[in-house]
Amino acid sequence: MAMQSAMESNSGVHERAVPHTDLGVIPALVQDLRETFESGRARSHEWRREQLAGIERLLSECERELVDALRTDLGKPEMEAFSAEVAFTAGEARYVARRLAGWMRPRRVPTPIISQPGRSYLYKEPLGVVLVIAPWNYPVQLSLGPLLGAVAAGNTVLVKPSEVAPTVSRVLAARIPQYLDPRAVKVVEGGVAETTALLEQRFDHVFYTGNGAVGRIVMAAAAKHLTPVTLELGGKSPCFVDSSADLAVAARRIAWGKFFNAGQTCVAPDYILAHESIHDELLQRLRGVVRDFYGADPQQSPDFARIVNVKHHRRLMKLMASGEVVVGGEADEVARYIAPTVLKNVAPESPVMQEEIFGPILPVLKTSGVDDAIRFVNERDKPLALYVYTTRDEVAERVIERTSSGGVTVNHAWLHLGVPDLPFGGVGESGMGAYHGRSSFEVFTHTKAVLRKPNAMDPPILYPPYTEQKQKWVRRIL
Ligand code: NAD
Image (cartoon, rainbow, N blue to C red; front, side, top):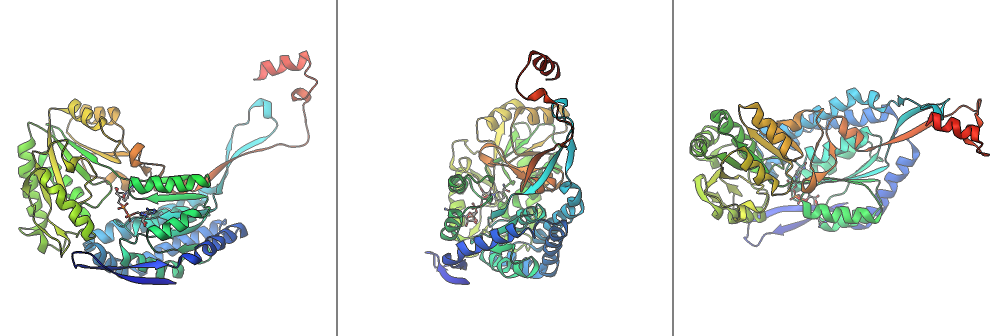
């Protein structure tokens, strides 16, 4: 079913072929998923556990293949591929599997006098057929992570991996049917045409990860069917470094969070707001850290990823001119390489400050203090993540209280999303809805309200004729 088309960029650089599924089969695939859902087989705890175990097995038995595919598509270092894609997702599957029975159990809630006698409870039911649309930057984690939540909640699922990471897309399309129930989980490969065709179908939930422009397209298409959406989007995640920060630690952690996957991380620190008193020292330290991490020539380092394609490479190179290069700046389009780069003297109006960078370029701006930094953040779209480096609790608390973002890590980069009990998602322009841990189960679950009444005892108080006596009682009870 999957076909390939060679793609030659206009630079003459040979880009990887894009796999895609025949558009004509899409309605039948969705219909099949609906029939499977209606058959009820995805509802049992046992089936759900089998699917979660299947995801874990896929990740462990195909680890080499996945890591190699990630290397091909993104030059992803093995450590980053293993930790952030394979191990992270397997850990999620295990975490959810262990707790699933408890989450599925109906939960009793009190019944007020007016509805007595009776039993009230929350009943967790699956939504139906779910569409997962994944992006290219963590193509394994962001396809299988939402998928595992959807099957844990008892849904059937159609996964659309990103065509921008075609090697991983191909591996997922081949392996998912081998490890998961093929009547309940299907993969469609391709890009805009295939996703557009998918969005014409009726789903019960659409879970989209990617940029906000496409997020709007997805939401508009889903609205035609009144289908709820989760939008995991991006944006510019700011990083405030206070005058009190431990600069050695801050520089190391910021550089790690930024240059991991060559900056192609939705929660990467996008830019730094450095207190003017420590601005110069922070730049010095960042220079040292980049050298410690990647050596004198980061292009030779096996621990630094590549830009996903030429289009993004060119986009990023245009942003370089927004400031003065303090660290890095070198690039090689054919190798899709951009050095870990730090910029200073960056104007807030410059191009690098207008869009999410999504690459290894780190602008550092001066700020006069925490209130100035808060103002700067609040004048812009609500970010997916926000970082504050400080040794003063009141500074951390002030930032947490006075700004809005999907999440916050204090004194590190994006580790909050590895805490399974913390929901991961955006707010405002950075998205809607959240997942991870229990939230991955809840986002694909409808909590149905159930009241069960016995037939015996049927106090006439609610029924006409509404006598004065009844009204008196109702006033007393309600
Ligand atoms: P992408 O280009 O892979 O697009 C995402 C998905 O949308 C793909 O499956 C693609 O086929 C589909 N798509 C693209 N154009 C479409 C169209 N016109 N109609 C329908 N579907 C279409 O990935 P991207 O958007 O470049 O991803 C990067 C963005 O995603 C960044 O903004 C990043 O911050 C964000 N992101 C967010 C998270 C998160 O968890 N919040 C995670 C990763 C990436």
